[in-house]
Amino acid sequence: MRIAILADIHANLTAFTAVLRDCVERGGVDEYWFLGDMVNYGPEPEKCIKLAQRLKHIAVAGNHDLAAIGELPTRLFNPDAVLALEWTKRQLSQQSIRTLAGLKQQEVRGDFLLVHGSPRDPVNEYLISKALAEENFRVFKNRYAFVAHSHEPLIFRMEKEGRVSFVRFTEGIGQVIGDARLIINPGSVGQPRDGDPRASYAILDSEASMIRLYRVSYDIGAVQRKMVKANLPMRLVARLEKGL
Ligand code: ZN
Image 1 (cartoon, rainbow, N blue to C red):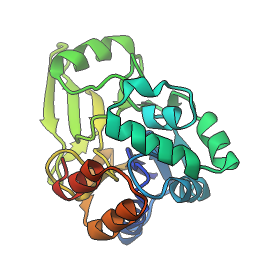
Image 2 (cartoon, protein in one colour):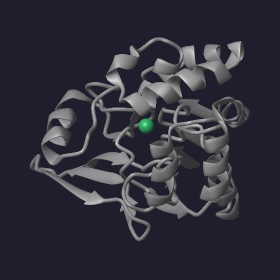
Image 3 (cartoon, rainbow, N blue to C red):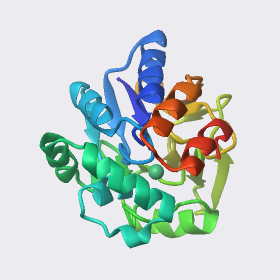
Image 4 (tube, rainbow, N blue to C red):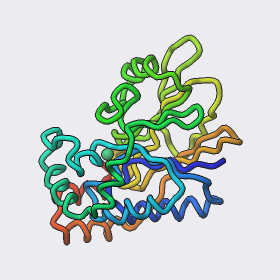
């Protein structure tokens, strides 16, 4: 089975559709796993939710998804994010609000745990260091976990003796899904922050026991124009082309 792992789409429909096209060009996938933050920041939250619903998928809730439906206080967000959240709330249909409200904070498929933040704090923790990974490996039982939230593609690996190492997850890396426990972040589709503005996602091939990262170019200018038209904060518009 081939599974596309998509995280932090952030209402960027242009990046989302470019990634779906890329999946098809690579021979297709059987299922999509969404790691949260489908909405906020970008200009097309409603269409992103609708499109995701049409795909065979599982999904977990991100902090922005919960804030967009009033289930997380906006004081936890920076001023630009709050402005964008207020705008996002006005775009969502009742049906999409119900869809977001129905998301769980974690899902399990086989040996994989899916969360947005981290295994111990599925909504809010940024899992971005070996020390944090070590602590998190202790609190979940599954062999592997997928996380998102930091928008940085990373792989944490626990060796047999318990030591944790990490690598930046780049296009060149084919990570074997084997004995070692792993925490994997596939990066962000709609707002990458690792200095590469291209959309980031991964394909897990369960028969080959391998996961690979892909980066996909998309029309960033078109998204920025839609954001300007919607009066979304300029800092959010500008950061897309820098991937920061
Ligand atoms: Zn996010």
